[in-house]
Each structure stands twice: as structure tokens, then as C-alpha cells.
Length: 143
Image (cartoon, rainbow, N blue to C red):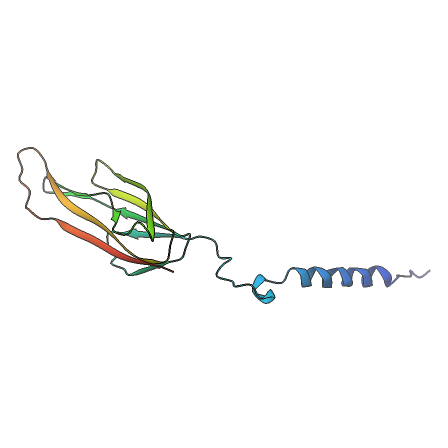
């Protein structure tokens, strides 16, 4: 006794797969700009970064500076700041007892901004610090 199969369900399934594939095409294939649909990014900067850095509108730029201790001297960072609050707006900023500092900036408008901080010495009791201030600076271009 033989089994008979109908081709109708297979034809229906093939048509459904074709319709689903056509509607799931990427946005770029439909003429939309792919960079505008890009999710916001988080750019992380540390002690060793010198820049320049490029950020897109909506991105967050996070600065994480690490202090250190050596020979009874504590090298501490100031809270990072931006000289241009139009392009980058600081949303958080703090310093920690161990000398670390951090801040987050939100890219709000096209333009160029410079993020700066300074490292200074904080001595243990009975110690003297050298009169040295070390600047940290990164230029961020927001497009």
C-alpha cells in the first residue's frame, strides 16, 4: 500500500517563507540611513588615552582615571570636566578617596569639546609633595 503526499502544504509553506524573507530585509535595503538607526555607544577613556576621539550624537563618553600611591605620596585626580558644555554635557562626576576620578559626558550637539583633569600629589603625614600638577586632556569631536 503506497502513501500519497499532497504538494499543496509545501507550496503554501514556500510562499510563507518568501513573504517573511521579503519583510525582514534590513533597513538599509529600504533606503534608510543605517547610521541614524545606530544605537548609542559608550566610549571609555582612561589615563593612557590622548585622543582625539570621535563620538556620535547620543553617545556617552565615560572617563575613568586611576590614582596611585608611591613612596608615601598619593597621586589623585580631579573630577574630569568639559570646556564645552554645548557638545558634551557632564551627567556624572566624582572622585574617590584612593585618588581615582570618573565622569560621564553625553554627546548632545555637533562640535568639539575638550575633557580635562589634573593629577596632584597628596602626601602622607610628615611627607612633602613635589609641586607638580600633571594635566590630562582628550579632545572629543561630536558628529
